[in-house]
Length: 493
Image 1 (cartoon, helix red, strand yellow):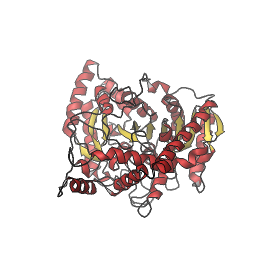
Image 2 (tube, helix red, strand yellow):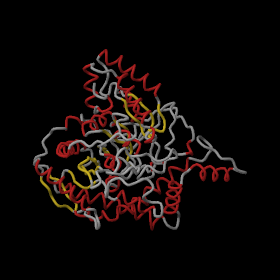
Image 3 (cartoon, helix red, strand yellow):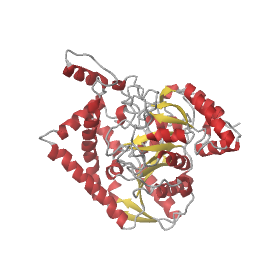
């Protein structure tokens, strides 16, 4: 019998419907794989008892023919999503052993549709990071390795646990969040598919906030089809989130296989960076050729304010983080470090509870929001953000339906290799992804090739607001041309 963990989500769904396997068998296979793969540190909390109970319930419903769209499918949940009665920490010491008494809207919808929770996945602390090295539970290891090397590589961040677990077959799919590339960059580093939906498409309620005007939940899956299936359950209007958009949720899976003939695809000249590796340029050209072969029309476009996106993002995001993280004071929940008075207690709690990167971003955010600097930094960054959004609108006004760009400036790098001396070196990993968050647009990363060391590289497609179906159609064209990418050896078992 095929190793059940190697199935795609779609294959597992079909096998469950045909009753050739049970959710209990599928869940047990994944729990066993998780036990053997703890060296990857993808999960920060395994929930085997809950998983088996949910699988049993799913099997009972499947037997009656009412299993739901995700009936019996085992998933991993990023530790940023509140799960009722199950520890949720955002991978920060400051939340301690916090167990929410409520469920995030996104996970509630997954359980409504019959999914099974395997556990909580590692992420950068409060989603602040591009390598999953800032987690209080330690770094996540990418299941991929460079040819001839046993150096441990990062899986990208902040959704590194989600990417590592999906790539290593430790779940059939995972929830993730994307504030500046935290779904698309890890998906690219791990050779899998990640979708950052349009801002407002998935509810943010019950997700630990980083930067509220940028954060968006989305799926990570083994294939474009798997990601489309997950997206249908994750999306939808939520009255508890004022930024949630009240639009019908399409059946995203139906977009797969649709012809892309005649679609206009924009190629932004500003994404051709000085010093960009030849293999990234070559991959981009290959993606253009694949879409052309499928009948799409390529158009050179300009996004003139792209060069300001990264600095503007690293003003807006820390400013919002500074405001959002003010609630972690040691009084209401989570960690508390005593002091001689309440001010000292606040200071001690936050100094001990937050990691170095989170403290850095809070300080930057507090600085740019301060009375003397608000206009010079925060206000100007918001104006730049408006111009970035207008660049995309101008492209779409020319009839462009999507843009094709690289997903990352390089393949995965080694743990400890970047950002130690200069944090900006790490921030540059977001160069191709932050514009999408600043403009509130949907973006998908699809694996498209490998670099000279055998590591996966991804291409990014950026779409019009709420036109994720276009991205799934185009993404499948790239996927079919490039093929699937899986780590060459299970060295972690």
